[in-house]
Amino acid sequence: MVFMDEHVSTIHATVRKSLVGTFERRIKEGSVYIFAYFGIGISSGYYHTSKHEYRLNFQP
Image 1: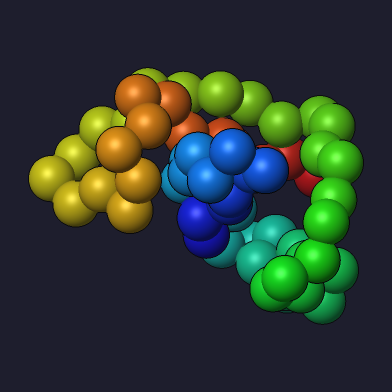
Image 2: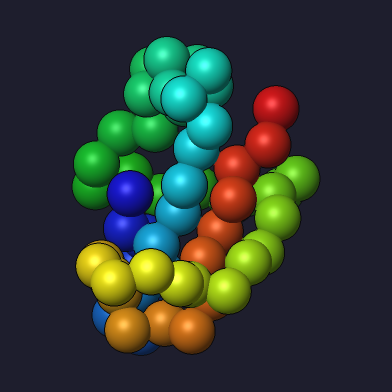
C-alpha cells in the first residue's frame, strides 16, 4: 500500500500476509485514517513504491 498525506507526501506500508484480510476490510481508498500501533523500517529492496526513506509496518 502507499499512503499520502495532506502535503502529497507518500510512504509505503506493508502488512503481514496473515493480516491482509483484516486490513483489507478496514482500509478503503480515498478515506482518511489515524493509525497507531505500527512499526517503522528502512525502505529497502530494488522496487520502491515511494521515494520516502522509511516504510510503515502494520501490526495486529
